[in-house]
Length: 310
Ligand code: SF4
Image (tube, rainbow, N blue to C red; front, side):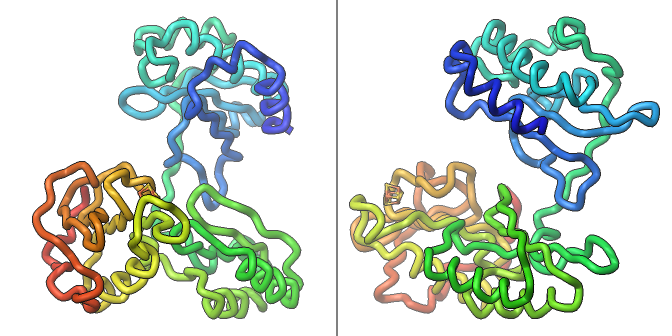
């Protein structure tokens, strides 16, 4: 109900159309197995308890993380979240929360009529805990299924729906992590995992495909003749073979649509080759060329010694 009302308020308030396109709200039920604490958002709402009462904490992005401004009743939370967005529009030079001066936080909390402005504890879930079986109760599991490159074609989706229906699954949820979550009974959950793996979904967080971003490439974009996703699958096998644990970005051209953050290894399409970039983005200087037609094993491209987080 909080999300539905927030959505309705956002849609009905024309002044909020001035918010930047990437201005985001995150609403987290709090205390769940898959919290949304690692998602960037200008305005955050998180369920919490204060003095035995269910409340909603309201926070916003700040330069050094999240600034929690205080709590409110659930019934008032959507209106206060929208009010906070209006204040961001009014006072932030970039119309984003993170650039509001931190000295304003106390005043914002007062203007919104929030209480308990002391820090709200939040738990961040590691990306390594999101695929496969996640026990919920003695009888139920969530099954996290990753979509390679964040994409499922309609045929795979229909086949997945059919096999899950055969296991009496009647709930599939989307997530922000390129994973679907299936609500399954304990006794059928393992079979859901193996059936989904057969359809090409990722069921293990250590699968190298989870560390690869690849744009649509030839057939999906006129800017390249490179089969980026086919190459990415070939490179995933090389990553497994060489023990490379870093991230890989395969881009059809210098635009880099699939990823803006740096990666340990970047291949940026240039004609029928890729420029090789290490520890950077598509905009960084290249240190060699990779020809997928001539070097199908990607020998030398991956060095396990380069497993460095960026
Ligand atoms: S990075 Fe280049 S080739 Fe890939 S989708 Fe974007 S524009 Fe197209």
